[in-house]
Length: 155
Image (cartoon, rainbow, N blue to C red; front, side):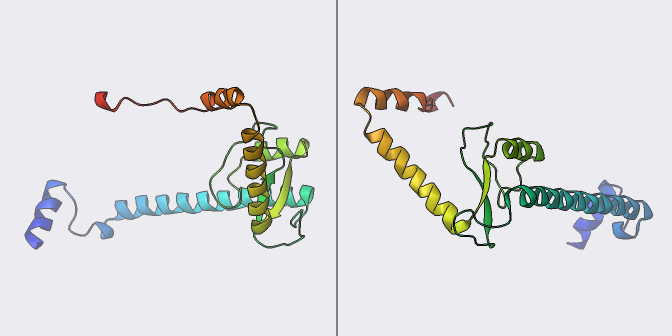
């Protein structure tokens, strides 16, 4: 094993102990500082978004009044170009999107339980609306959302 490490060091012109090399330490330190600044920026941005939301829509669930496990809910997802986000409690949403939605009065806080219950009711209502449509309208809607089939033989 030791022989292999020596050969790799020779091949890549690496010093015997790269961590003692001053150039490597300088580069590593600058990368580490950059990552730290990035984390601080993201944290500040997240705090600014929360502050903006708390100032405009309060700090409790719109249904039950709870202050724990709050999630951002779009009242009408179709208004203002709602986009799905990944991440913790909607905080990956851009500040511009949040400001636009606040102008439209389209955001509210819901606790995790109320948000889940409300979403379930919305899905049930949509399903009930769909199944009560005439069959030709159902087919029309299904064709709009149909995903194209891939030809696996050509892959």
